[in-house]
Image (tube, rainbow, N blue to C red; front, side):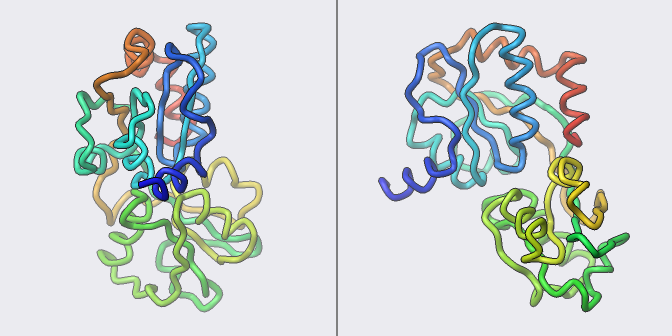
Length: 236
C-alpha cells in the first residue's frame, strides 16, 4: 500500500495537508490544462485556494481510496463509475475528443497515415488506466489499423505527448487539449471523433469532503458561461 501511495504522490502537484477549508481536486493528467484554468477561475471568484493532483486515472482512483480529503475527481464518467470509488454525484463538464499528433517534420491527415513507414513508433497511454489510451486502442481495433507492433506504451497523455515532442515517437494518441496547447511544436495533429466510445468528462464528488461549501461553490460554477468557455478553450 505504501508503494502505491508513493507512486501516486510522485505525480501530484501538492501534498495532501495544507488547510482544511481548501478544495482538493484530483484529475487525469491529460486534463491538467483544463483544471489549472478552472482553478484560476475558482480562486479569482472565491478568494480561496484549490489544491490539485494529477496522474493516470488508475493512480487517481488509488489515491482517492487511500483518503487525503479529496473532494472531487475530474475524469471520464464511465471510468469513474467503474473505478470502485463510491462517488456521490457526476457533474458534466464536456465531451472528450481523441487526437493523434505527429512529430515535427511529419504531417498527418487521417488515422490511416499511421500505417506509413515514417510512423515507426506511435506513443499510446495505458489503456487500462488512461481513457485516451483506451480510446486509441478502441480506434485501432475498430478501424483495423494493424499498427499494434508500432506502439510505444506510456503511462499518461502528457507522457505520450512528450515522446512525440522529443522525437522519441513519430506520432501519439493524446487528447485535443494537449494537441492544441502544443501545436507549435508538432508537425500537425488531427481530431478523431469516431471509432471509440463517447467520452463524457465529469466532476465526480465524494462524501466526507472537508470543504463542503467550497465544493458546492465549485460544482455550481460548472454550468456557468465562463466555465463553459474554459471547457471549450480546452477542447471539450
